[in-house]
Structures are given as structure tokens and as C-alpha cells.
Image 1: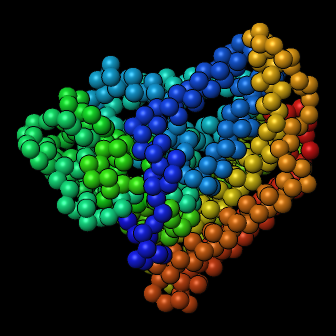
Image 2: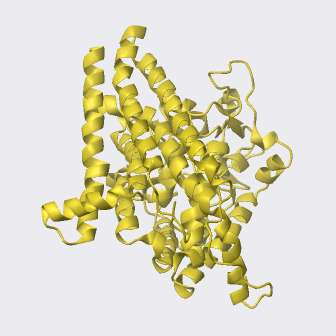
Length: 520
């Protein structure tokens, strides 16, 4: 598929790169990556349950909250949704698909992102209310709960219901992966037009009903106009349309039909479509970062995002959560919480935190975004609803939100990344391996501390720059005249600039050094 900003030029394809390409083409590449991360997850769970309960001395207190989150934003920034591809929670899910029926359809009332939005709100509150970052034991149980939920839900429901509709981590990757420089996409749309079997979504079979010398009979596929989902005629489930018999390669279980798929939203980078395509017509193509945020086509499995308020709510929640999550780690938050507790007469910290997150992640965003959308509509003279305008223009804030997430998470990784070295040495010593533990103290900075603030500012300002570009291009897409587009875009530019100012203020505050013994 040729990107619109490079007409006539075939895009770079990571599958055709040396070393990396052959590895990704290998059918067992994802299993190898998942197995590595499964091993790490087991170590984290065991150390979290049975190891020392001081977070800097426990793998469960350091790896998930310092290293994993930092590497997640780096991967999204440089490659794409690498961590969904290597997700260890999916190995037990594969086992569930073998031994459990997985025959039920996901309830229609839950076929949206509202459940995921609720789970994210719950997680952000629980993270602070229960000090998950400081409790290896609770961290281990969070990881175990993920394994159990993925196993049970995908063992009884068709497709990848847990990933698509519930997983909070996956939703973070889906939304922020929209700014990544790569996407899984078709190379030549004309090849897909000629394809009879549509293996990318139904799976590839060695033998199937109606098979002939030319391969299996084509399975009709239609688009559900309301939901924008590729539907296999006869009610068959995407991924293994004809059942298990004869299946040699699964197709996309998230119901993303490659010829009509757009970008990284809801894509786990599982690469099933790449392995299933009999024409070798699906690749991992390099594109302009954040380019998919500017467009509003009918997306397979989603529809138009401008008509999906649940997707807009998910994206905006993650944008504002980037700032609220950082605010929860700086000194002024404690004064605010004390003031709230004394003013409202509420002695329970968990209730005060619930109010804080409710205001910070629901009330304030709703007010700010609603006012911005109203101003944009008034200035441009538009007649659309506030919900439609928010669902259209709100996506412009995603790069800024990612910039704040990246600045925050990389702060912890860069300032405390090397704490892993003495921690692993002591872990091995506890298991009886020689070498002796290294000293336990020190921040373990990866780079000189004087470099960290400039890196944070660069990431935040880069996010603002991309948000302004995306916002203006959305306005040019929606409005007929350049002047009207500028007026429609202006309030969103003001909001993005104000959020950037807030982000800079947060970054200059002393921040808790979670996962280490020191703070700066």
C-alpha cells in the first residue's frame, strides 16, 4: 500500500530487511518472543510473591514499573507495537483455544471500548491507591490476574476478545501505536482484489470443504456498515473460519480485514495475516509517524473513528492520564490531597484518590475538551454536534499525550535503569550462583542526570509539534476553506499548548524515584 505522502514510491518494508526480515517471517518468531517474556513474567511473579517486599530489591518492583514501561514507549516510538506482539499473556490463551470451546460470540453490548475505558480508570486509581509500584506482592497478583483473565475469556469467546475489548495495556499500545513509524499493511491492493480465499482473515487450510486444485472455495466476506467489521458469511469466526480441522495458519482474530485495514488501531502485530497470506502481499511498512491520525477512512473492525465516541473517549483518557499520572508523583499532589481531605472531611485516602482521579480524568477533560470543541465549532460556523467534533479533532492530542508518557517513563528508565544490575546479581546470589551481590544503593542512572531534562523537553515538544500538524491537517480535511480550517483548529492548538505548559511544569517538579532508593 503506497502511503499518500509518497506517491509512486514503494514504502520500506521491515520484512525485506536483512536479519530482521527473515526472523519475522519465521512462523515461530512470535512464539520465541512470547516465551522469553513469559520466562521474565514467571520470574517477576515468583520474586513478587516470595522475594523481599522492598520494591527496589525485588524484580516485581523494578522490571514492570521502571524498565518495561520505558522500553514500551521506546518500542512504540522506533518500531511499533512490539510488546503486544511479544505479549506473554497470549501463550496460555493459545492453550485455552486448544482445550476450551471458544465458541461464544462476544456480547454485542460490550463490542466497544467503554469497558476498556472503565478498566483503565480503575487501574490508574488502583495504581496509586494500593501503591502498586511499591508492592511486589500486589504486582505479582496483577500479572497473575492478567494470565487468568486472558485464559478464561479467550477460552470461551471467539477471536481475541480480551485483547480487542478489555486489555488496558493493549489499549495503551493501540492508541499510542498510531504515532509509530510502521504498520502492518498490504503491499499491493490489486493483489488483494484478485485473491479468492481471503486467508488473511479466515486462516489458511491444507484441506477444507470444497477444496480444489486451485485451493479452497472462496469464502464470501461482507462489511458490516454499522460497525465497519469484516464479517464472514455464515457467521464463521475470523481467524479460523472453517473450524480447526485442516487449519495450518490462523488469520486475524481481531477481525481486521487487511485490504480495508487502516493503521495500527486495534492491531496487535501478531503477524498472523503475514503468515496466512498465500500471495506474500502483507508487510510491515514504514510510514510517516502519526499519519493515520489525519485520515478518517472506514477502518476494518472499527468503522470511521469520527463516529466512534468510545474510541475518542479512550484516546482522550490516555492523553489526560499522561499528565495526571505524572502529577501523582510530584510534591504538589500531596498538598492537594490533604486539602481535599480536610475540606471535604474525608479521612480515607482511597476515597480522596478516587475523587482526585475522577476530577482529573473525567470532569476536567470533559470540561476542557467540551469547551474547546464548542469554541472550534463556533469559530468555524460548523453545524456538527459536540460529540462528533470531539471524535474528529480530539485525535490531534494523541501525539502530545504520547510525548508526556514518553518523557515520564523514560525519566524513570534513564535515572534508574542500571539498578537492575545489582538486583539481578543479588537474585542470582540468592539462588546459589557465585559472584556476590553488588551494592544496593544508588540511582543507577543510564545517562548523566544533566541530560534527562533536555530529553524530556524534547519528547514533550516533539509531541506538541506533531499534534499541531495533525490538528491542522484534520481541520483542512474537514473544512472547505483554509481560513475556516485555521479558525476550527485554533482552539485545539490553544488546548495543546496549555497542556504542554502543564507538562513542562510537571517535569521541573521533584518526582518520586519509584523503584530506586533515591529521589531527585
